[in-house]
Length: 239
Length: 173
Length: 173
Image (spheres, rainbow over the protein chains, first blue to last red):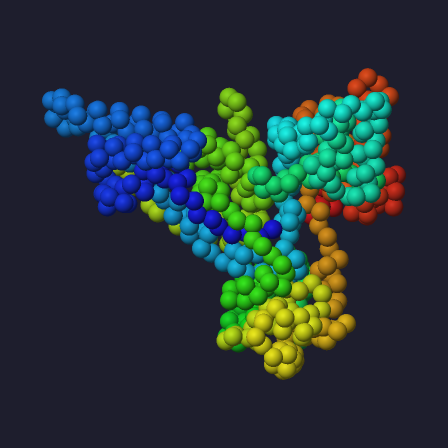
């Protein structure tokens, strides 16, 4: 597998905050909270108007900012000598600095000569293989993801096809055997193609149940290339 | 052995994964490891000096020949390689795992200020990050770490070769 | 192109099969085939002259780097050693399967006192353990056994030759 690094606009509320600090050329150790809070809320509005589904984390940070702002407006109570009220911004600044450090580290990593992007070794790039000397921790497609994929297949099918009822009685065991046979021949098949072979509801559901059952029995494995990649089904063991 | 340097070059060339000096010594038998290391250094220097198409790199605890960077576009064309992009989110997550390992997801989430389930899953799939174990605290959260493949992909000898993380000043002081 | 020779060297290096001058010209674009052939000749001569570990050979209508002949015995020794890295947990699981086969997972779990899903899966992947069938009891649990590869890897004539668990571990080193 080869890699390329892509830059997005904001990776989260901290990223947005860092952006605002940079844009306003503000000293990170002395953030004018009122100004930044105002701009932060404006940006949230903008993102919302673009129909972007804002994660709860953005709201949490907005609340934190407003809280800090209100704290800074309160008069500082007279303290005993030596006892200084901590800056209400301290925790957030610490968090921002930490995030910034990792963001830089990520950039620096991405700037290295990356294998299969900048430099290459002999032979084809490896795909799912592990480096030698490493115990494999299988990261398979979860049932949740399978169900999502199942819904995608169902929704992409023609409605009229789904209404057709196949009178032929198909048992789960039959479908399991069929799938195992197909996989023995084809080595691997995409989840969509396995499901798509059947166009009536009963068969699709049975195929799906058969896949779930086979996964549970560890007779087959499902792998996905990337978060939204094609799901491929493999035999867990070759005969 | 007469052509020790040439034989070492041949061994590194045929090996599919990075080859360590120890392994080379084991293969060759009556040879000092220091000589192996010295000759590996010479091979690396030779490549640099003659502006070769390949360079000897020290990655993931071993030595491997890799193509020079400016050949990258042509190699990609030849091999039909279309790099799978690693998102910024995944790169940030990878950085946190690399520097903070062994680390649990809650800590990565805290540093990044967002949920990292997606990026983490994609890193696991790419085998750049692996599950190391479970932490012995309530909920037994999964502990993550980087893989040997991570070192190979990012051209790192070992974890100590990671670019230094900017020093975090303690504000309380 | 400035480093044409180096780029050609890189292309031949990464290619899995012998690479023809025509193919190289196609990849590089605005380059004469005669230049490609001339540079390939130079690369071959360079290798010979510096007594390199690899030589550029013309085989099956293309060019390919091959290790020099006198490195042969060492290359064979290197490639002949195929370590199958196995974790402690997997070793224990493998031992239980080997000595108790045919065996169901519940029995392995009971012997080891922990869930063996992970190690078992990794052993299946490594083809050291296989699914033999299903036990005819409620739940129809899967029955596991060792494979022919298991015998090969551990240098066993047959299962009667099975060493003790301790010896099994030593074989790994």
